[in-house]
Image 1 (cartoon, rainbow, N blue to C red):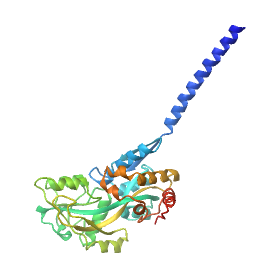
Image 2 (cartoon, rainbow, N blue to C red):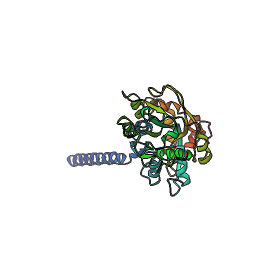
Image 3 (cartoon, helix red, strand yellow):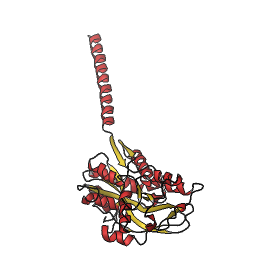
Image 4 (cartoon, rainbow, N blue to C red):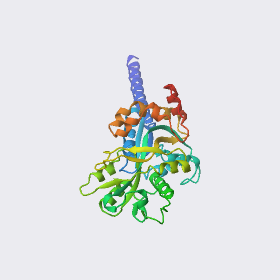
Length: 329
């Protein structure tokens, strides 16, 4: 009898141990399966969206349990809004003008896109960059020149066309038009294949820094002070006067007045409220880690992030701002 009881106890312990081990494996597999994967639609590799997006992806992955975030290179704002619309991206970067167009279903968008803002980390500045050798000194001098207006599907392309049209220049007839990314455009200036290009991005933009520092190349940034009121009158207060300070780029030793607009990190209106809350909180409260990636992150603050959005804020972002005593508007 004693042997039988002993054997039964051993058998029970063996079965229990096997069951526990199986449970642990199942639990571990379940936790792994629950890992959430998010993607951020950024921009071309020569711009700030791409650099900042990579920093945000790393920060969120490191800070949020069971969440892995990847940054995806895209043609930028227009495509980013379309990717959010069809749920092929979870977060995106966009300047205010394109984000508003997507929300309103106008210009490049045939239908309204249900976008919502999480925060506005910094501002974008429109650059019209010309080679000194081209003889271009003003925006009107672009007529008849070979000019890149930005990559297809980019916000830059939208803005460039609007600026030229406000000057009475038809972007399809009055210039020799190219559609290049900022990195390709900088390469085009170096190789003397284009005379000028448009770019909308943060300060400084890496591709333009590299171009300005290239031996044998001198660039000129074109002033846009006269254009800003026209843009605001026609397209609304998404545009305001900005300044590219002298010394931002090598050899550009003068201030340049340009058109600027807020940049938004945005999502689909159906993003879970808690997720939107956490993303907003982490980006704002851990901005010091993003400053190491790009200095434009220095502008991230409660006040800057909660004002100027051209579209409604997500309820999760609103919850975070209100907890901090700020009402987004």
